Amino acid sequence: MRKLMIPTLIVVVAIFLMSLFVIPEGERGIVTRFGRLIKEDNNITRIYEPGLHFKMPLFDRVNTLDARIQTMDDQSDRFVTSEKKDVIIDSYVKWKIKDFGQFYLATGGGNILTAEALLQRRVSDGLRAEIGSTTVKELVSEKREEVMSTVLLDSQDGTGDLGIEVIDLRIKKINLPEEISESIYRRMRAEREAVARKLRSQGREKAEVIRAQSELEVATIIAEADKTARITRGNADAKVAKLYADAFNKEPEFFSFIRSLRAYEKSFSSKSDILVLDPKTDFFKYMNDSKGGK
Image (cartoon, rainbow, N blue to C red; front, side, top):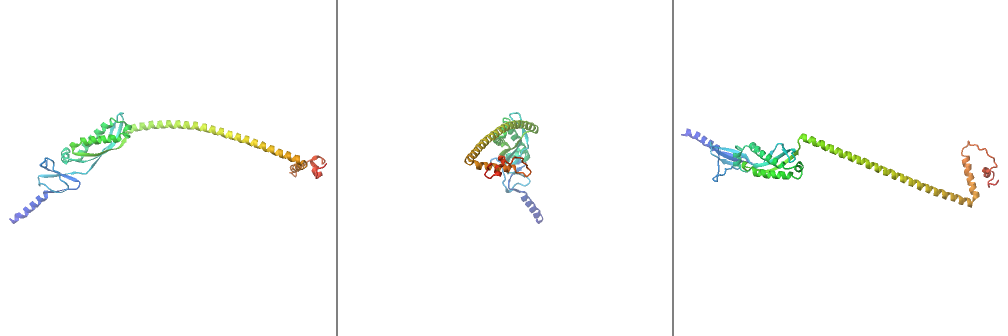
């Protein structure tokens, strides 16, 4: 009897340990018995929260499902706009499991890859329908948010059979195919070059007009200045002449003396000058007589 107690105790402990299972934080558990989901009395799949739980050993199988928010970073795909132009759109979707039992059944045992493949197909169909009624200009400007909101609502309504909830959908990038981009860039470059040529031509024309106006203004200012200078010089010469005349009339003898001294200064400014004159001429009258007498 004692010999059977130890093996029996070991079997009991083993069965007890086999009946225990732990659900990690951030996950949920589903138990299948003979391949069928264990359900509650109200025919709803029994979901095991994180923690320690019990099951029937050997007959029950525990499946854990990630309850956290998942991010499906979709691959770039090509779509056609209402203008029949191709665009390459890169998007991502955030989703989580809402009905774990339905998710388990719809994805063949809770396969995340299968769920994302089905979700990607439905999101792509929604984007294709919306982008097909939108132009490229609208898509990259005012209708981008509208397209994302519409596809998000359609995805939320159309993924209930998968047991998931779509939380967010975003378009990350909108690109044109390489061959179309090159054509557009060439056309844009040609248009910019035409505009640049036109602006340069207009600039040269305005520069010539400004230069001609400046030259005319300069010539006008110079002419006015020369005219003013001539008038001023003439007035000054007239005043000087008048002063000389007045001085001559007041002291004709002194004026004659000054003029003679200046003539002497200019005539004998160089030591090598030779003058052949009659000493009795009026030129030497102040040198012959300090009073200028003949």
